[in-house]
Image (tube, rainbow over all chains, first blue to last red; front, side, top):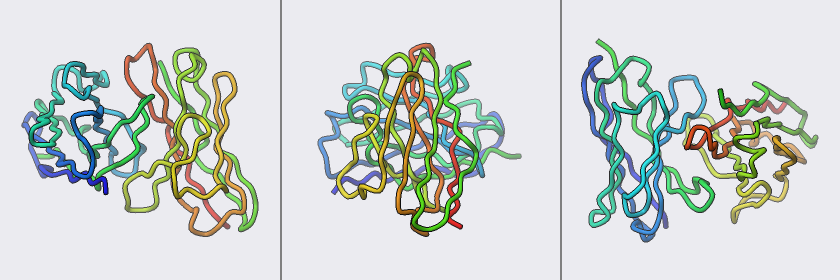
Length: 118
Length: 111
């Protein structure tokens, strides 16, 4: 059974940093692209970033470029999102998702809440 | 600016058919990139409903169907049930953004 479990969310001050983790199990992690998607309170889904199965290619939404870094550790079956210079508008539930061909996100974690506030 | 446009809300009575549109542009759906649809029940994570424009993952009832034409796509739900009340999102890749894109979401209300 495919499982994705996010962790690392919490309350952080504007300008602060946070690292999210996503532990994967039930599939061969090293053969899949992985994606982070976020959802601000009461709002829709926003694609944030994705990473190739070997970590060799990464893509980001413009609003996080230069501030967020997606990376992975295939030996630990884990995906990460390093978030720096956090802003109030980054407040959201962050989901990790497994990405199959053509960018489809076929399995999702339960999400972790990040709140940026003073 | 690249966007995928969905109606904010749709509604229907039990047993009826509803459709949800997703209008894109020449840099996403119109460029031939696949459209995927997700269902998000209240308080839960999104769930894949339709992928590759019209394919259903195992376990998704055939009451749900997808189609695509030109720069637009549609999700149709027949035989509406109370449990279908949820938010629905379309998604596609956009080559001008070099990344993926979600529609704004559509809230389905079963009357």
